Length: 340
Image (cartoon, rainbow, N blue to C red; front, side, top):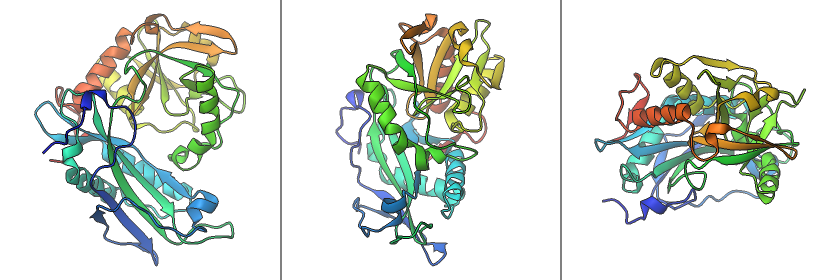
């Protein structure tokens, strides 16, 4: 039976659910893993995760489709990305096949916390891994925990699709993402000062430029950029330091194969931004959030179609991708993973 939660007014915060998944790596192998009600973790004060931050995480969602199924969206890609994160951080990879199975088990166990269709809320799924044995010399741990917890959430940005304001940041990100989700392992903690500073100055997010030349758009602290040109071409920045977003890749496929739009993944010079017709941030938590203003050290760049609401092309992208996720539109093979 569904929990008695005010689904329509959920924020993006933590609500404890009944069950979580745990698997232990010890003596060179992962155990079978299990579902547990225990949400507490007991570790040595010298655990590697505390001393050298050897940890990484993923984020995905489960939701109820129009026909009543509980599903997740492309969890195999999150599992693959977490494998890459682990390798980059000298951690043992938790196999993506087991990752998908674990996600399935923990969502099924917490199915009463999955918000109903049409509520605007989802069940956020947070897989994470950490080095757990005591380590005082600078070296990887030898023991690890892989865990998954879930929590029902509302929109990531308050106001849902309300346009957001970002600033061009003077801060550099702490580490490149490369081909894996290194942001999950290293970069979020190092970006907290920058995002807190942005919020204190009235901005929703930071726009990071490339650290080498500070002339090309990279991403924000929590999402990828997606732009629309005046001739309706979809453009997203290309860089080996950008998080390989599942949502961004899916949107580019939808733009080309569902909407018949031209798509370009290429370096984007900051000087181009003022000429784009639409701009948005995309990611698991927000799907697409329209960008209304970009503040470049006091000089405002206004995105014409995003000042009051999402622009028409981004709205079509949003509607099509969420339609696929919610079962209203036929999905490409393998995109929808049914839980129950």
